[in-house]
Length: 296
Image (cartoon, rainbow, N blue to C red; front, side):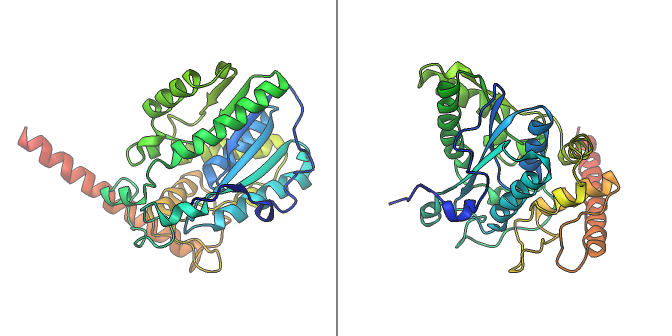
């Protein structure tokens, strides 16, 4: 049987001294520990929200992201935002024995390459966002009912996710919200907040830079407490060949910043690898477009 419970050990002292956050601006976020959701958390703080952050342990190979999520919340608590965030880690660890995906312990190796390539579909966890969404919706509606406030469900989904992950598309989100409203009383109190839906990793990172400046936080201290790698090593160092890492490194290159997370090898090696991969990918795109044009 799948075990679903609140993982107090994973929470450590995450700010659960605040059993229910008060305030008339409430948001719930699925905080994976990745760059995208972490930036959404910063944006919510910038906009004055009280935030309930939910992390999920579903047997992912890159479970270091859960540690990073806890570390980020602790850092924010210590740097002016204590009392603004409540975090819980929900364990769904039993699912790894019943769900097939390369991202889950026991699955095949995580594929490498550019994030637009077809083999990235092997990183899809079937119906993952729907499972997460149901829990998040329940929590958000409970907060809305208890506080009388409207509640935002904040997500870091972006345009780079749409092609590979169907449950990151607006069509899925719209249908999911319709089912939520039809299945619950007063569900209209809860709405979605997806600020990066039409953007990419660079747009997210650029906004994160602005958020750090506004919140008077150290950009490097924030983002070294995130993980995007699907293939970190035993020491928690990020790889630079899996698609998720390639996409992150590209964003840092475009922003003109060194990524503060530790990479297997070094940042310079990671940066050089991705720069070469992007050139190769662009050449392939141009050749494909030329072939298609000739066929027409």
